[in-house]
Length: 395
Image (cartoon, rainbow, N blue to C red; front, side, top):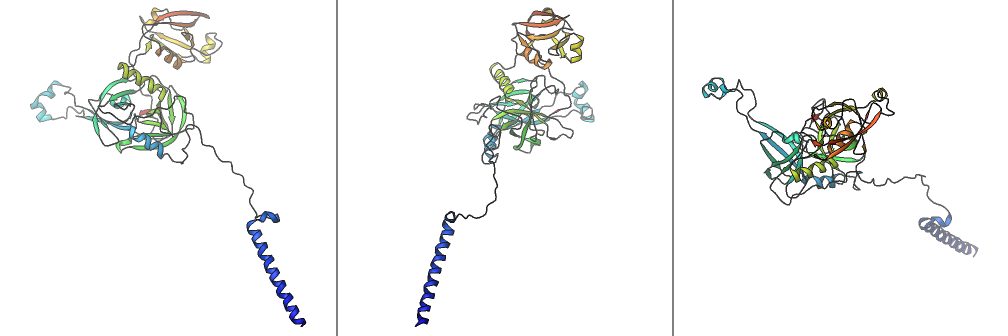
């Protein structure tokens, strides 16, 4: 009898224990906080990076959307320069040429060039570099959709190395211009063009510097520097931000090998738009000119002239009979302001003079023998000039 009772108690204990363990297991599985117990965790806090404003990577961490947006707006520019007449009259004699051929006239019979361009309007205006189409007799534009169309030069500006072309087409994918002050050093950019004639190519980099001047590439310089790979054939192509908006036109590279070494230069969109609109409207770019030669005022020169600071520009020469000469400007004067705008250096002076309207009067403030003089000058029209290359190559 006792054995039967003990057996029943054991079964009851075993069943109770099993139920209790099952309940405990369920609690641990679904509500561990009830028992103040949690699995062990590593104490690691990660700060989520915010999406950069302006030139950062797109949210997909890919440049594909920007590339797809800009590629249809970038074209390939092919130019041909036809053979000129023989340089010596004897070479025009057919008998003479029969015996001697072209051995005495080594010039190439036909020269070709290639570059890139950017569609800026839906009705066929295209922006490129002046050096791409300079001296070209024939220009062909290859569109991204496979069409090839002839182009004519609407106008060019050698001082900024820009030119505007026109093709007879409509409904073209015009590029979107970025805001002039939207780019910053460190922003991602894409360079789109036709390097070495291999076909449409996209490379990526960052904006390395802004406002590069005194490089000896163009007369008027305010370059964007980038490390995006730019090579021969990229000239006139687009430099765009990570949203596919135009921030500059690729123009030149610094190189010792002929290829990209991570130092490329693009003309900023602010200057591009200003020149482009003048060319489309008037066929050329008009700038002011007063006929002076200037140089930067160094601290040593400022001290020799008893000036308190090195601000301003030293007038090193005055063109005889020019506007400045007629207005009383003399070599050795220190030009301090133009129409009330202060002159910081020779580069800023060049831009201030260029912005003047030909035919208008300008007030120039100069320092002469420790005296300040206000002189009135009749502004002339700046003649077209080309700054010689200074070790940098058009690409």
